[in-house]
Length: 307
Image 1 (spheres, rainbow, N blue to C red):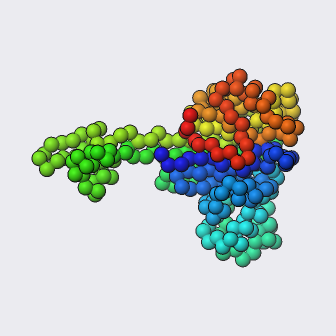
Image 2 (image 1 turned 135 degrees about the horizontal axis):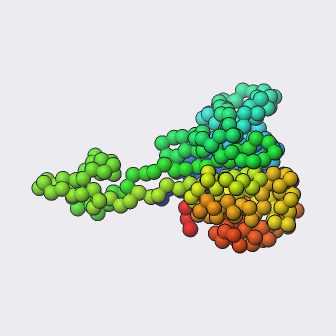
Image 3 (image 1 turned 180 degrees about the vertical axis):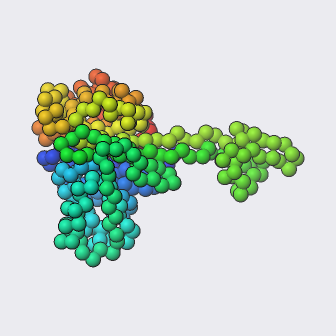
């Protein structure tokens, strides 16, 4: 299977600490690289991740709080200094457009590449990006400002043709795609070899949902049903449930409830409050509800679809 990885660059909340950077991650899928959120310090973490700056195709911003977008203009500037020529696509709530225009006029005149802005309607669940191999959907979230999560889905691939069958029946290269598409093969002697003997099943499509920042949403599980990996706001443990509700964040138990109800493969907790020296209590509480839970951490690479 081709790589589908999530590179965690930052998983802290609004106040950066010596342990956690502000929110940012890179989704690597079938050789393409997409950034989700771009908090302060993202460029440093991007270098540490060994993901090339020039590989970033698009950036998805969840909402207009500084810990999710303060690093964006600096990254745009750095792309210019590195000689980028490919367009950079930015998907974000519409209000970012005017702010970004002002910043770019001040700091990023004369770029040799285009920055193309795509406004995301944070009230709708819809496909906002699509190419031959994947789609990205917006996920309406409940936060103090308009906020959208993002759902990355692979498109279904064709079955794998068996190498031993190619050799056995001298199948020419020109016919391989036809067989992958469902065709049988007829030998020179007129024997029809059914397609089922020639191929093995395609790899199941994988999916990743990013849901940060958000208050607990009882219906959210419907939008992320069955995803292989769910990253969910887990700013607090249950002792701070009132604080989570006040500031439109979630506890780890609430994140686990979403994961459980959505029947996801794995839950990844993130956006940790700076009040915690470690997040073991956050993890322990989530695992009482959804055992297949992990903590995000800077530098961690999570493979989507792996058990």
